[in-house]
Length: 298
Image (tube, rainbow, N blue to C red; front, side, top):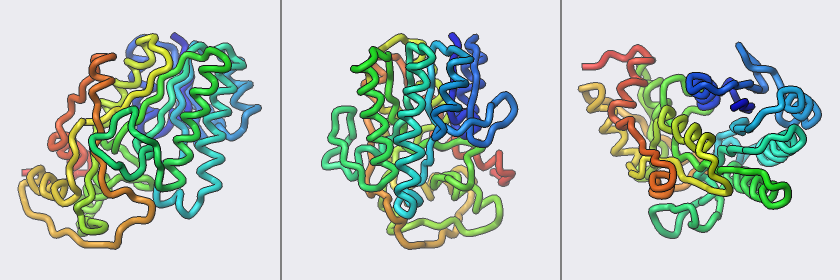
């Protein structure tokens, strides 16, 4: 299968492109930054993106390119709408014009917002609490619309909190922020009271879910991609201590704007329909990140 991956120089996109090539697919990547084997194309530029897709004639488009910081989106809402919502429309239009039959969209559990009940399931209400979540929800609606209007076969993936080695410090989640601080001899900072819960899923598991969704031929489906377990940030701090084999002094900071407090995400649907299961244990995943940063483990 010939696959066009947007955001192919990013944390998830670069791994997905490599994994798809290893599975025998022909992969072309685009990213604002460019890079080795990745063309420098901005998804906000419909003309450039469409011209590239029409030249490549992909069978499928996997769309990851996006701004991804909830707190930042509160300060820069218009930019998030333009890059995430309109960027998705542009990717869809490029897929349509080039004749691609499949579209895999990376959304986010941020579309759910602050939940009224847990765990979150694919049919839970969408009530984003920040512009990032809203931009992703708008992207989802565009994907569904292109499915209805043009018969585009699609799957929407809603990853929970993705972590793993190589995550950008610019958009680092709490696991990467903790690991980087520890490796640099600084105190990791817990924002708020630490009772906020998250569902952490390793980047390698997310890549496997995307590959399965692409190859399955399934159409018009939305899947959570998560560990299926929630953990508080205070509990996460203890997992870091266990992984290091020693105590850690944590600092405290104010809550981050735009953050939800509770999250627990069901992965039952993707497990049942695609046979996907998360394989990387959180403690071992954290040890891998700490090793990547050169931290000394007991």
